[in-house]
Amino acid sequence: MLLEPQQIPSREKLILAGLYLSKYDSLGLKKLGFDSFVEAFNVIGYALGEKPASIKNYRDEFDPLFPNKRKGWHKRATRQYCLNVFEEYKNLDLETFTALVKSFAGYDENVWSSVDSKAKKGDSESSFAKRLITGLAAENYFESVHPTLAEFKNCSIENTTRLGCGYDFRLCPTAKGDFLAVEVKGINERAGSLSLTPKEYEVASNLSDRFFLFVVKNFREAPFHEIYQNPLTTHLKFTKKERVTVHVSWLTSV
Image 1 (spheres, rainbow, N blue to C red):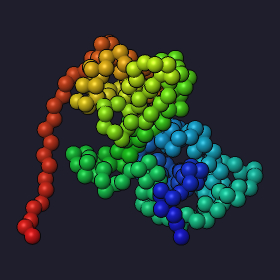
Image 2 (cartoon, rainbow, N blue to C red):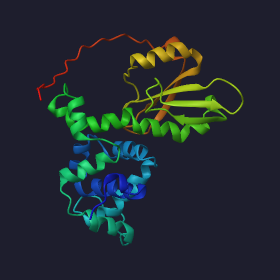
Image 3 (cartoon, rainbow, N blue to C red):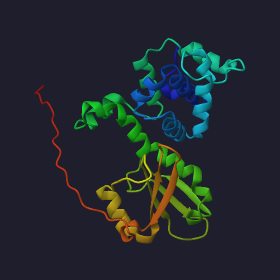
Image 4 (cartoon, one colour):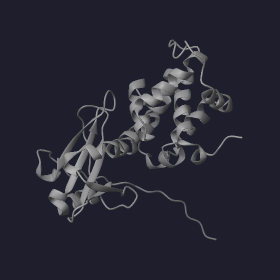
């Protein structure tokens, strides 16, 4: 009996991601919205809180079991704990397996299809990758590197992504002092566009030098970051853009 996604151990999620990419190869990349394996390793790896190489290693582990062009770890037998996962999940069809991998990052196709109602049909497959890059993958990247950053030296960290306070992390110096707010954004290329919500823009304006915009770039190849303190006063030019949306509901009397 297969476990519910929330019950699957962290290492098993990594193994399953590798199994999926090995079994479905380029078709799997397309279903998840990635253009290359390197991009998939980077995004899924950071989204699951692990190094991208972990996903690659598990894909290579399973490659000898499938008829793709890669040889993988063909000079040794597949490790038993990986075989156990393979046996348990080998009968999943493409759609079910794809939904399972997406669920590891809290992605529900039914929910996001209504949120992305204006998206073109061809964009639906890429929305998963885009949301991971702009959200969970970038946030976990920040958590992994923040202890090494001079701007946040000797600071404790609190994840505030679910609190709706206009930033993703609150960092507090061990010495007495006001907290620092960090809003994390991610983009796939070395350069691109990003947006601040009205709440984020307001908080950035109010906190000024205590607000940091942390941008993770180049998930497509090798992620790196840039930090903008008080971003509204830097060379970045923010242009206000307004959009009207229509919400449809169906009413009845009971």
